[in-house]
Length: 275
Image (cartoon, rainbow, N blue to C red; front, side, top):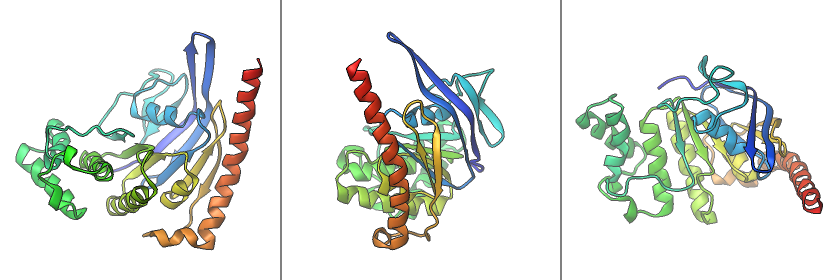
């Protein structure tokens, strides 16, 4: 599926709770061009995952609009987007079918959506595994794979749906440092090969800079886009880049923006405790 031009226009989200209204996101605007790997980060509770969920069609917005390739997903007339194959989400926890082999997991989406027949879907899945150099696990089950390998398979399964936008909500959270580093390189290899638009949510500054073409920092609640930094580093990227001055400079720039918001979030929390 081609395209991937995502536009968030003055998006707001207010939650109604037992203690009153909570404004999670307010007047949030962002434009992501086709083929970007756009990372959003900010302090906990700033609304990062809320934005991703709104794009996916899991959460309604209360103001503004979201468009994908010129088509309104949600806005004043329809506050919740309808989920669709043009947007595929990879979550923190595995959603692979444990009773299906890796190939069967990858072939499931194209077959169920009717875009390919059963035999064609399987051939397509095997082709994707071969391109990712994962043919040796084609007939294995998810329970036989490491957590990192399951993540790789989930991302490949998402891409087999040929989405316009791939939505990744902290997919490597909880992994050890070595596994995360391996997954970063695997994701970039897949991204460079596919050219799909990616919206990636994280709280890790170095992860954001290493992966992203652009990094947007959100303010503490209510969440807005505070700044967007273009990551002008060469591709393909390898882990060697993390020691280079240009990388360290970008990490410092993004860290400064995040640090001030984290401080504000902490101070706001302290005030709430005093009350």
